[in-house]
Structures are given as C-alpha cells and as structure tokens.
Image (tube, one colour):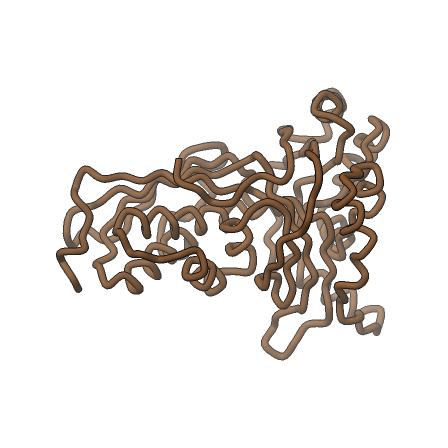
Length: 314
C-alpha cells in the first residue's frame, strides 16, 4: 500500500446522500442469475443520510458507528454497504482501509427508501475525498454499481430512470417541486423477501410478467416535464406493491387514510413498508402526515420534498 496517500489523523469528511421514492417500479421475470430486469423511476428526497469518514490509526481497519432511529438494526460489520464502499475506495486508491465511519440516519431503516444505499454512496464520496483518491463521478458510479442497484442513484440524485437492474441511469427532465408525506413502520420488510413474494405470486398464477419497457413510462415522464403533480399522482406505480401488501396487509389502511386526506397519489415505496403520499403542497403533506398520526396507521411520519441533489460534501 502507498503510505504517503494516507490521510492526516485529524481529517474528517461528511457527505450527505438522499433517500428516494420510486415513482414507478416495473419488474420483469426473474433471470437465471436471480436478478429481475427493472424499469425504475427514482426521485431523491430531502430525507437524507449523513456519513462522516475520519482517518483511523494505521492498521485499525474499518469501524462503523450508527446514530438515529432504529440504529440498532443497522449492521456495523462488513455486511454494511458503507463498509464495503470504504473497502472498494481503498482498493482503488491504493491505501489501507483505515477509517472510522459514522452514519447519522435520517432515512427509515428497511423502509424501501434506500437508506443503506445512501450510506454506501456517501461513504464512497467521503472516503474518496478523505484519501484524496482522485475518483471522478463516473468512477464513483462504477463502484456504486458494484455495491447495489440503488447506490448509483444516491450518488446522482434528483430524478432518474434506471434500467437493467436499476443501476443504468438516465437523468430525467423535471419541472417544479414535489411534496411528499411518508408513513414509516417499525417492522421493516427485506427487499429479498418482497422479491420472493413477487416470484411466488408469478408462479402461482402461471404467468410470465412482461419485460418492462421504458415506453410504458412515457405519460409519467411527460407529467414530470410538465411539472404536473396531479397527473404524476395518478401514474404512480409499483409492481412490488401487492407482494409487500400481502406481507404487511395493515399498510392498506395506511394508504386509504392518505387517500381520504386528499393525496394526489399513494404508493408503497420500493419494497416497503414505507408508504409515500404525493401532496399538493408542503402544507398538504403536513396534513396527510397528521391524518396518519391521528388514525394510528403509522409508527412515525415524515414530510419531504422531491428532486433533491445527490451525494455531496457538507
């Protein structure tokens, strides 16, 4: 390893990366490698993760500290994507992976909003900056794609279309601000479990889902370009929603409460269990959140705005 590339002991870098909501998620048939082809339209939200990378003594290796709600659920070993991100950057930079990572979580844990992927994206940029690795955004996107399908989007932010496994990204043209209310549930749903439920439903019906096509999203993309949240709300879509609701049927009532509160559209975010409701304004988002609180149909509520930037040093 190149010792001269090691960071000074007093250096620390903090990077903020956004959580996301899936405006549309279309899932194709499982492939021999176990993955599904996807067409995934992501929007980055103002709900975020902050990751601080601090230089550690030579030979100390990687350590992770987690703060925030449900921090105890987050692994602090090499199963954490942020840990693996640090390893990848160290390997690319030619330095020993001696770093302390502190994760300050603002995105619900196991909520279908890609908090773990945001941690990984933030760790990539933080470690690259800390070690002066000279990695540009394309380098980071490449490393992110090796960690998971949602990691490149957390680096890019704003609104984008993901194809392939969801990691081949094309920025979307978007006008305006989008206001969201988010119903958080303490009982998380693992992505793998929801995809298994999706595959089980397909097998039971004896149907092969069609290959997802980007053309299917033309109306939704037009709504984004026009800055039309009412039309966007009508077009929110998630092929994983019914499998998630089968595993967590109480979410149906959460969705119904949001509709009764006048939400423009309601969708399970990604693999769930977070329910995202599109509102007319920030004030309306607060009203939807208050309806969930009053009805007891969410363990916690958040509001956020959409089209937030990707990972950045703060």
